Image 1: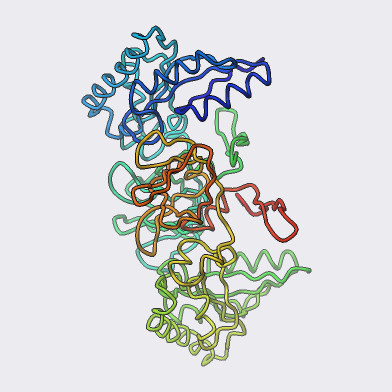
Image 2 (image 1 turned 90 degrees about the vertical axis):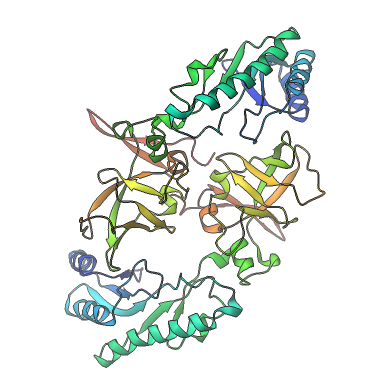
Length: 262
Length: 262
C-alpha cells in the first residue's frame, strides 16, 4: 500500500496475468500502455492497439489505465539538430493521445523523454513526465550530443598505467570489465577518453586492459600514473561496479550500488 | 606461505616496488617476464628487454626469476587455419627463450596459450603451461573458431520474450547488462544466438532489452516464451551475474561468483 506501482506494457499477454496477480493480492496496479515512438524496440505501433489495451485495462479488476509511455531512443543527434525529429515525435504522440481521448480514455499520464532529448522534452505538447537516466552522471556520448559539458561529467573510472612496453600506446588496468565495451554512437571511435586529456582515446579494450592511443599527444605516461577515464556510455559502466566513491565538499563517501546485477 | 605467488610484469617500475614489498613482508615472489607475442598489448617487445628484467629480478631480494609468459591474443582464426601463425609464434617464443638461456637464465616456466589456440598450444616447443579461460564455458566465438561444438556450450543466458509488438522481431528481457555488448569477432554480426535455434541472432542490445531477428525464421515466439542465449563472449557476460545456476545429474545448484566485480 505504500507503493504506487505502475507497469508499462504493450501486450494483452502481459496485462491479463498482471491484473489476475493484482486481484489475488487485493491491489490495484496502474498501467501505462507503451507505444513505439520510432526506435522500433518495444511498444505498440498503431494507436488502435493502444486503445484496445487501454479498454482492456479499464475492463479488468486489479488494474487501472493511467496513460501512455514511450522512449524516443532513436533521437541521437545534438540537441540543436533535433527539431525535425522532435516535430515528427510530437505528431506521433498526438496521434496516440488523440485516439485515446476521442474514445473517452484521455491519458492522465504521458511519460516520455530520454537523456539525449533532455533539454527539449519540455517542448513536446501533452507530455506530463520526462524520464531520463544517463544525465545523472553524463558520459562521452552526452558531451558529444551537447547535452552536457565537461564540467557536468560526474562519473569517471580511475585507472593506473600498467605498461608502456609497446610504443605509441599505454595500457591501463581498466578494461571492458570496468568501462564496458560500447561503441561510441555519436561519431568517431574509441571506448572512452581521458577527462583531463580528452584528445586521448581508449583505442581498444580487453577484459582487464584498456589501451590508450598516444599517437596524437606529446604526453609520455609512466607506469603508475593515474588517469580518469570518461566512458562512452556511463549506464553500463556503473553497472559493473560494486560501489562508487562519491566526492563532495566533505570529502569521499563510499556509495553502494544496490541495483547492480539485479 | 600457503600461496606460491607469481607476478607477470614487463617493466622495472613494476618489478622494483614488488621486490621491496616482498622484502618488507619477508617473502619471495616469483616473477614471470611477459613478452608481446604479437597482440601488441602488454609485454616487452625485444628479447634483450626480457633479459634485462630477468637479470634485475635475479639481482633483487624478495623476487625470484621464474620464467616467461605471453598471451597470443592475436590468433583468432579457426584451429585448422592457425598453422602459419603458430609457426611464427613458435619462432618468437624461441627467440626469447634462447636469449635468456644463452645468458644462463634458462626459464623454468614458459607460460602461454589461449582458448582460441586451446587444441594447438601443446605443439609449441618449450611451453610448460597452457593458460586458457574461455573454454571453461565456451561461447559463440569458440564455436565459430572450431574450439568447441554446440554440445560444449556450458553457459547460456535464460531470457523471456517480453514484446512482439514490432513486426519481424521479438524483444527479450536480456540486454547488454546480461549478455554484454561485444561484437562478434570471428565473422558476422549480432550479439549472440539462441542455443536451440542458432540461426536466430540477437540483432541489437540496449541495457535491459535484446532484439531477436526473426526475418529468417518461421518461428513465431509468444510473450512469455523462454529462450537460452549463447553470448558472443562468455567472460564478460559471466562477469555481469551475481550467481549462476549449475545443472548436473543431481539437479540445479546455485553457484556464487566471488570474482565478479573484483
